[in-house]
Image (cartoon, rainbow, N blue to C red; front, side):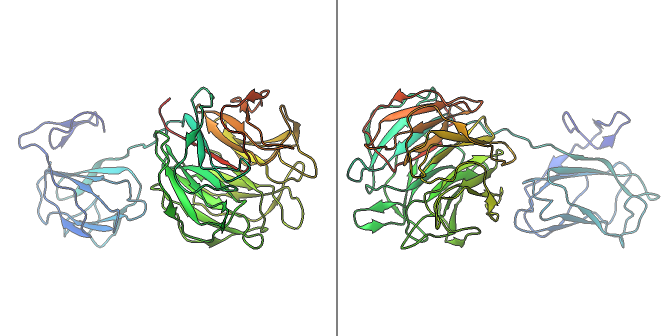
Length: 419
């Protein structure tokens, strides 16, 4: 319904007409049972449990009760209406009346003894917010010849800022992803003392936090991506051998325990989000270079191997672009490569496109500007400080001499709703 709920008469137009007495909204109901009173409105919160709602045992024609899905959880935990001896749409209370649609609101009016309680309106309020696109990116860590904890912020225009001395343990061959909608996380990697299981959260203003002891197997040469719009996933990598495992990251940046992965154990993979709420891992090295992909659902479930399209290679990078698509680019297969493979919003990987820019590997990539991407740094015969911007249609631009210390085996992620 639209407009203000004033009182308890349903009129022919479908609006609620005013009569004496008014409609009084009550406190939010979280209990599993509640007995309601005529001429009141109730927000029913079924986040933790279903709720049985007992209607009054006596009612007069024109009495009204409104029930509304407070947390949009009726699809998970439904409400059940007990008409308490009165008829409900002409049926006795032997019949079970459930409402189980998220966002539903029911306006019940008592019509009299013949039909009893009748929904004067039974509507579902659409909830289709569009998450703001992330605008900035951050490159972090890597090897300059020794492990570093440097970061470089990327503006919403794709301009790379000068070095910022990082916080946390210097390391390389780590991964990064966006989480919480507008924040980022760096995780895992290799230090001079070996592989680590630690993370560093990045605020929505690009500030890197101190080390947090990670959960899960310490490893390197893994990849990370955003999924479900506000969560992240780390996957694959190497310990003493190649692994097939993932670690989910919730929208508060908390890393979950290992989940045995599906698909071929490998390292040197890349990953990116696609389709607005899903992700994919691609390529990497198992017993040889591969062009495998593994799709990730919007629940973080990794699917079985799919034979990829394009040149098998390792230590490439990937980014989201165009809002719902992805791009894999660069890498190594015995030679340094300058090629890319676009991924559509259904997760289908296209054939090779000869890339623009310096062939290299061990670089990083992220989305920026809401719908564009950036590849940065890497190595050939020496470490590089350069970037290649990716347009909203997936076209890679020529080299731009980067700002900051040349390095390889770093990671990157997108962050910040603000430009």
